[in-house]
Structure formats: structure tokens, C-alpha cells
Amino acid sequence: MKRNCVGVPSRLIIALLALVSLLGTVFVDRSMALAEQPANIQFAEGSQIVGGNVLPPPNNFRVKASNGYSVLVAGLTSKKSNVDWVAIYVTRRNEGTIYKVPAQITPTYIQADLGNLGEVAMEFHPDHHEQMWPSKCGEPSVTESGYYSGVFDFHGEDGYTTVRAITANPNLSTLLNLYCPGASGFTGIPSLPGAELDARSSMGNSSVKIMITKNHRRRRAHFEASATERCQGITITRFINSIAAPRAFAYEQALDRAVVRASRPFAGVGWFHRESRVSNRWTGDLTVNLPGRTKVNLTGRRFDASLTHALWKWN
Image (cartoon, rainbow, N blue to C red; front, top):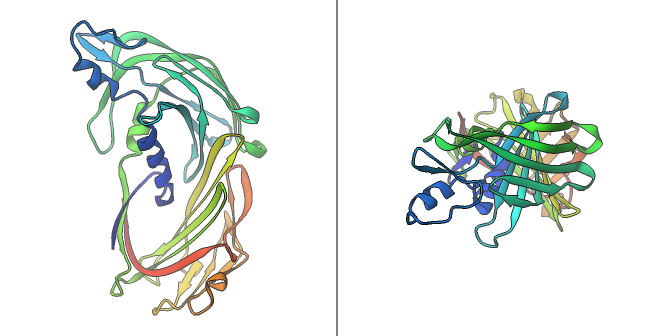
């Protein structure tokens, strides 16, 4: 079976792109829709006519936060339910957190109560020029240029990062690049030289996933983990990925058994036994430290685990 996955930051964050696809893309597509309307149309507040073209505002901004993190805030609206949301992407190299928060969104205003995490109340100020936003893998997008002002206050859980900003600049290219392919591969074909261990647990509004892949028993191991939860109306997805030495993921060629001995940010050991009962197939004390949540358990009776032949290519 062939699979294509998104890249930055990992395959397990397909949910990130699913979120953008579900909710729509920050009013960007409105420019095309508005341009096709009759000449006497009443454009949405905030849409600007520049050089005869209707340009939408970017409806996102990006700021730097503490401890090396970057925060991208995007105002989104659901195409089906007409519900507004704010998506907050907090990232640092190979790790990050995505917050999905109910909000009030207009073409020029983003407002959301983040509870204990802070608040967003930012207004867009256009300068009546167009802004070109390149993409690493597709056509560029054009929006109205300008900046945001107001209040953006964010405090990550357990202080993993903080930021307070009264002005911020848009960065639509970051959102566009999320659509770029990052990895593609095959699984489930016995002749493939590598292996993939996939373990998932779900209970109520929370879920935990870990995926470990090697293209050969002597190749390096790719670790990807994520945890999703819902708290006070906010959906939170934390993720991390890392590359480890070949010994971190060892398996028999027949894929009956495997052992995982990972290093930071992972800790502990995990054992896979295909012949055991489903509840005992994936055992051990393997954990991971995610942004804002430490020692997340990655093994146990609640996990549904599989081990299959695989071959992946990372871009």
C-alpha cells in the first residue's frame, strides 16, 4: 500500500492539514470568489481593491516566542458550519503544539479567549499594496499587505514557551508550505526491506500515537509521536519527531517481534510481540516528553499496535 504524507514537521501531523482543509484557509480563497462577482458587489469589510484586483487580508500573523519557539496564529472559518476558529501553531525545529480555539473572525480582526493560555485580540491595518507569498511547492498567493496590532498573550503549559506582542506581521508562506509533501512510501509489502511500528491509543477526547520507521535493519530509525486532548473547549495536538541510531529500533525479519530502546526526548523500552493477545502485544515503559506535557505513556493495554514491512522516502 502506498501512502503520501505531509512534511513539516512529521507524518503524524496530518491532522494539522486536515484542520486547515476542514475549516478553510484564512479567507485567502475569497479573492477569487470576489473577483468573479458583478461590478456592483459590496465587498466584505477589509477587502481592498488594489490595481483593479480585490485582495483579501492575510488573516494570520507570526511572532517569536521564548525558548526558541515560533508562533503562527491563523484565523479560520468553517465552510460547513460557518463557525470561526483560531489555529495557533507553536513550533521549534522538530516539535510543536497546535491549538484549535473558538474565535471571532472578520477579514480584519482576530479575537479569541485562550483561557489560562492567554488571549488574541489583533486588528489588521492594510497599507493598500499587494503582498506576494511564495510557496516551496506550488503557486504563490497574493494578499493585501499590512500589519496587525492589539494584544497577543500566550503562556504555554508548564512554561514551555511564552510571548506577548502588541504588533505582528503576517506570514502566509508558512501556511502554504504546510501543503508541501514531506514523505512518501510503501507499507505492507513483504519484499520491502524496512519496517514500521505503529501504535495508537484513544479514549474519550484524547489520543496518543507513535510511529517508528526504518528502511533497513541497519539504517537509522525515525521516531514520530503525538498526543491530542481537549481542555476547556480547546483542542490541543502536541507532536515531536527525532532520528535515532539503528539499535533504537530492532526487529526480526519475519516481523514477529521488535524492541524499541529510545533516547531523549523518548525514554524507556517498548516490546512488540505479534503472537501475544492484542492487549499484551505492545508493552513496556516507553514515554516521551512533548511540549507542555511530559512523560506521555506510549505503551500499554489501551494501544492498538501493528508491525509491517515498509519503505519510506523523506524529502
